[in-house]
Amino acid sequence: MPAAGLKTIIALSFVLAVGFLLVILSCALWHAYYPLLVVGTYVLAPVPNWICSHCANPDDFVESSGAAVLDLGRFCTGFLVVMGVALPVLLAHSGLISIPAMAMSVVGGLLIYGTIISFAMFFQEEQEF
Amino acid sequence: MSEDRLWKFNKPAWLNSVWARNAGVYAAGGLFSLAFYTLLDSAVWSKSARNASSLHVTFLDWLPFVFSSLGMLIINSVEKQRLAADSFSYSGSGVAWKARVVLFLGFAALAGGMAGGVTVFVLRFVVPGVAWPAMGMGVENVVANALVGLSSVVLWVSQNMEDEYSYNLAL
Image (tube, rainbow over all chains, first blue to last red; front, side, top):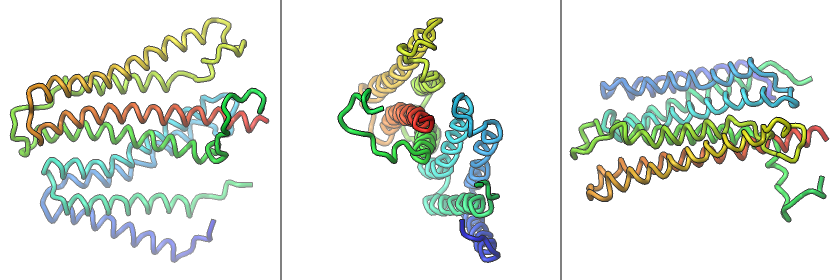
């Protein structure tokens, strides 16, 4: 795990700001505010993993019920991540938002989710012993 | 461990890692999401201004997806280790038999959902000879049900990987 310094925080917050800028521009330029749903999706995406990891003991290999709860969390996270891409494509296909707005909201959403994931990777507490 | 192996070829070692198993579960969630949003896309498109035809998505089009998802839920809720009847510890009170009945119901619901998707596609779109932009709604129905089946296959395989993994850990 590389040492996470001040530069990492600055870079991550910059990327997060660019992501939000893209999503909000994709809404405001065409006066159709559906792509804001993407932000909510990607903010919610790590939540099932987080909840289920608190519900289960991953070291418990004898009873596989703990692993099942973890799998449920991963399944929901995968669902939400793909939803963040599929939702703008759906809206663009039905003509509710335009194609450039779709591209901007997809890229912005991926930037936001990438920021959340890399923040969790860089700044998680060292659990190895 | 190598005496009771059935197949000639080994599984590659990376298939048994936790990483591959977790990636499989994430991929199953993603595939299910893709299936749901494919079907939702057909419903939204049928209500939007681009749908010039008089054909609209109703609850009938959603029914095969409901059955596929129900089958997927049933299949992946069954504890796989209870299926092995030759392990005497679990087959005592007929748990393996019950697991087989429930799994049969699950697979029947999954296959019925896929067949229902094809039925809706043929009866509502192919036989009346719908033109192409509206035909997409029927194609998306078939694709969505196929994706649910693919998702449950991926989830099943990656959950079986977990058993191998814990077995390796126990040795």
